[in-house]
Image (tube, rainbow, N blue to C red; front, top):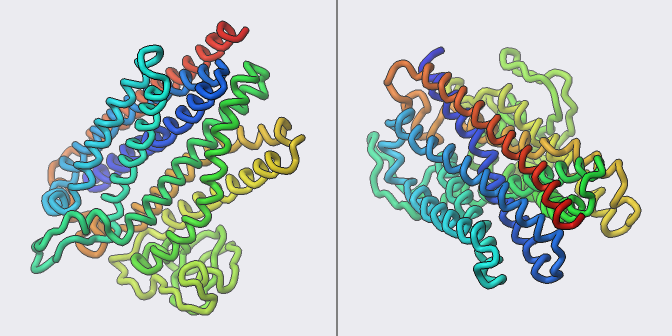
Length: 438
């Protein structure tokens, strides 16, 4: 394997693995805090059991996320030394602040896990809230750093030198808000649907129905609200990308030719040689409207992008279609769920609705991975958009391929361990519930 490809593959593997645990770590504490609040207000031990069960899951994902996140910080320096040499002083602030948020999260989680019966009940609940808030802030700060790579700011690039550095302006670049909002909602939607799907499966199996019903409702509400809001966030992100990264938008939509009243492409197989898309459904003018709010506006195509600066179209397009397709399915399930809650009460316990959530269990995280692929692959060949190319930032050290194989084995093993721990935790939850409420 080529060292450049190996370095990119290792970074992609590490990010793809870490992002799952980051999303869960950002969101699950809020589920935990809601169930804890219900227990304090109602004194219903079912909510206490749900809180304790979720808190153990949070601890598992926190530990795994901490390990994988630490690996990423080392990889940035080891695999991309030229990038970090120049970019570190510019966008280092969000990483430093993220470290602070991480320490606060760790301390608060320790208080929460060992605070049962030791603290005032409201202070104990508040420590759980702090876990969620600090985790969310941590995620937003990391995304702000990534947004800087898509929309560089806070420096002047003159004769190959990075001068007049402004870390605050770099952190609050033009892309940070849209990316942070989109990623945060994606985390809530993905985690909400995944957790709701697992509890829905337990309900269908008729195991500890009351326990899993309470847990399902909390997770489903979070996930469904986020899925609906994601449509607004996605529209905002599309318009933002159209302004800042027209090459990425063109790759996302396999839009080869600049034109007015550009059609939105659904599906299709892009052919980069013939500059065509086969078997696609086209909606006339829709891409122009989504990109610029006008059905007749011009959308820049790949024909106006130099050949050596064009992103890989096929990967970017397919990833974008997967993200949008799964997001649309989740949105429709969310609509059905809220119809059930607000209007059709007899739908709430129906098997078909629960089965939809079970089917949707992995959809959010697949969409997250696809979205992250769009963000990173769609920026290529740039590591800093318009400033530094990825090939110029990679380490000159040979033998990276062996490192990639080693890390693949480590992450695969770690994933199996986490799956086993979660499976054991679910079984323990059932036994705990039977003891406490049998």
